[in-house]
Length: 392
Image (cartoon, rainbow, N blue to C red; front, side, top):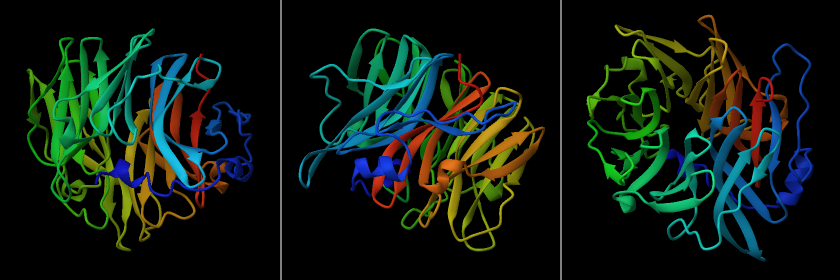
């Protein structure tokens, strides 16, 4: 299975107890802004209610004062019985609030996992489910449908370039060999496009609507998935082509993120093996001619860390999100900051007195949103965090 599926383990416990354990009210809570020139990471909202546990997989901005986060909630319907429903949150410039889908709008059959959010504006928001279904919001109305070959695919990422240029990405098959999946909608329906290479597409980044970079892997390496399948592909001239070959130290399935600022300024996040038998977050940079690789500066451990999100900080630097697989106590995620070519971290925000996992970052102006969950043992609730000023 691919890495989003791993994150669904352990959905048991009391959401009411989570509010107490996390020191946050059961209603959506605002975290204090630290007095500094640039406000540091802090929790903005926790998403929970009685008998409900929520997990947020993805976050994206659609306007300076609008953002979206999506995942799933487990709702207790009777003692010992629960069901999974879509979880969607939106930022209106003042607060994060839950989105209720129209009655009768169904996203396929079975568990309702939402994995990927993308938007090109407030009237063009797309949310993909793990099982190959999509949701679209045009600013007024929600619609849903099925992607090509939905029964074969696990969706991991999406990209909305414009109202007539949307993409959905992921992989088909089961470990250790996965095949890349890409489908495109140009306004007349979704069509699958051929992608060279092996590995699921776990991250995408557009330089322009006709120049798109994507990274392939499984998003992690763990027991049962030790495949070296990985690589880069590029969309140009109306087709997918193999990208520049990755450096040897990054050629593993732990690749998880990409940020293409131009064709001569591409960042790829993943991991490199370390001296303790684990993996340490690593980032490769392509300058148009050659790669340079930085293994992020932290002591080696047996834990398997990898970078699964890279975004600009709005001031010329970058934020990278590291996540771990396996023995992650006490932390499941940590943050790295690049300024002037120097990476610092790992930063473990103050709320990490509780076990938290941010799953994705999204940039807007001089701020960065993060979406994930708070977990203490078996407790779980959705978390939205912010670095920088409140977007306005």
